[in-house]
Amino acid sequence: MSDRTAIGRNIAAMLFATPSLALDKIADWRWPHFAATELACNCAGRYCTGRYWHDPAFLDALEDLRARAGHRPLIISSGHRCAQWNAAVGGAPRSLHKTIAADILLSGHDRERLEAAARAAGFTGIGLAARFIHLDRRARPARWTYA
Ligand SMILES: [Zn+2]
Image (cartoon, rainbow, N blue to C red; front, side, top):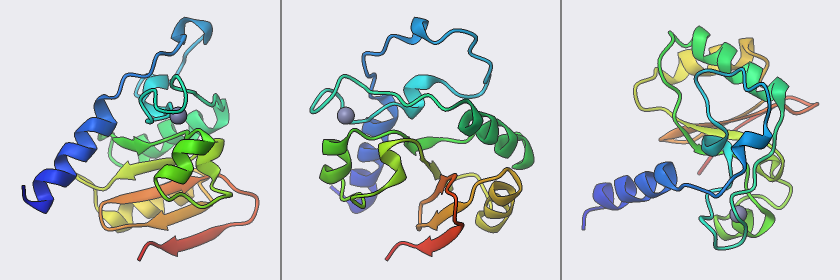
């Protein structure tokens, strides 16, 4: 199996994980381009049952970003992570994925334009990787690249 195939398969596994989630418990869902399942933990039942961290301001910022990024889909490869899943995928111990952060695939987007749009939409934690951009809303702005 080529690396590319393996990566594609891993991304597909992340995208199509369907955590058991009581979506009906979230009243007044008003973010048309995002679903709670996209932001729920991807551990697929290994450590949790698809935990989801609801932050309306974060979702507002995602919708704003999508509009600023040319109204093209934003594909989230990682949102909330339960503590065990965060550790399993090598996340930083104090990663904001343990509350809410989003890794968005760069495919179909210009990296510089997406980063600028993310800043304009109010994201203050920005991590750049080859295939995704990490976004969160932290008190003290930070920008980093992944090795
Ligand atoms: Zn989990």
